[in-house]
Length: 112
Length: 112
Image (cartoon, rainbow over all chains, first blue to last red; front, side):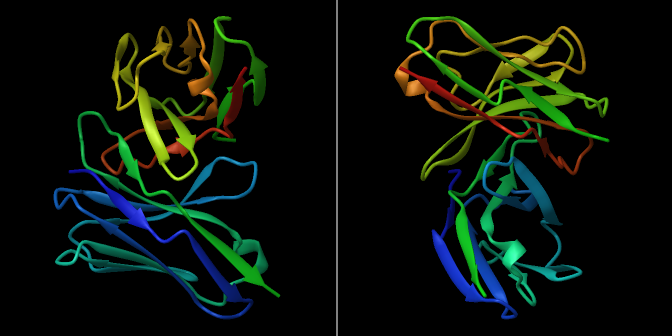
């Protein structure tokens, strides 16, 4: 089935690392994505990882993929107050329909 | 600037009054899609279009119509809106196998 799960809330202090976790159930996912949504704004693609990769690093962002456990994580190093937002993981499983299946989002709160 | 635009951004209407939410992209993308976002449910796909004159249902198409007469535009039509269609709506477009979807800023619809 298609189900993506995330924890609802994460609070960190400025300068610390944040780790946002996601689990998915469909092993046929080809790409997995992280999107950021700031208040009143649309979704911004942060990064993505192809399903045959274990890790991808992009500046302060590190994505880890554990295919055996169907677990995806996003690590934000040196978290800043501007990183406060809702983060969604999503998987792309239907190449024809191109639908993304989203988790319900993790609200990251960064405290000064 | 590459972007997806939606209009209106906010709309309050009454049950049964037909409305259209417009979506336009300037990236020459073939694929476009509509999602609705509801608390605790993430984003769910309503309809999608693989190209001009090619549209199909997503996960939650009931009560919605779309059209794709031109590549850049993909309007969402609610012929007879009902209160359960109160939601935040996003249009998205993408191109290529990586399916990196670019989202519009969202339209918050309230149906009384």
